[in-house]
Image 1: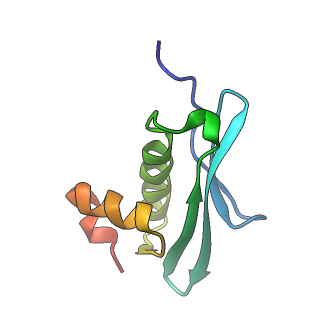
Image 2: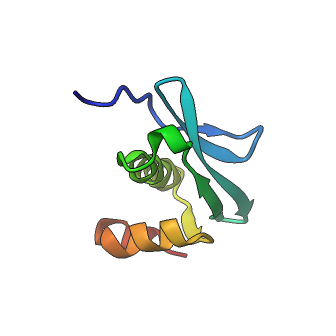
Image 3: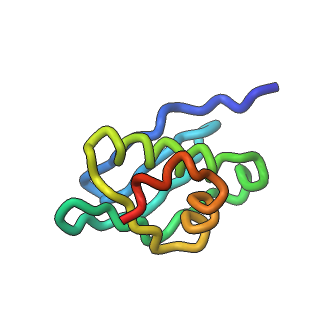
Length: 94
């Protein structure tokens, strides 16, 4: 059975990307610097771990960053690993 996920959204008030899943929220904190978005920390609630939620979160965040024509700086190891595994986002590395 597929996971019921919402769309990734940019919660600018909290400076984080969010993905709501089954009543819980995974998030990626960021800070902006000029034309870059520095993702500093990703967190997935324990009940959602091991199900690909963090990957969907990062993918959605990268799509939002691309749509704004910004670059991304991976400030946490999960995002570093995701970018290494997904060369289709190499153009966003800044």
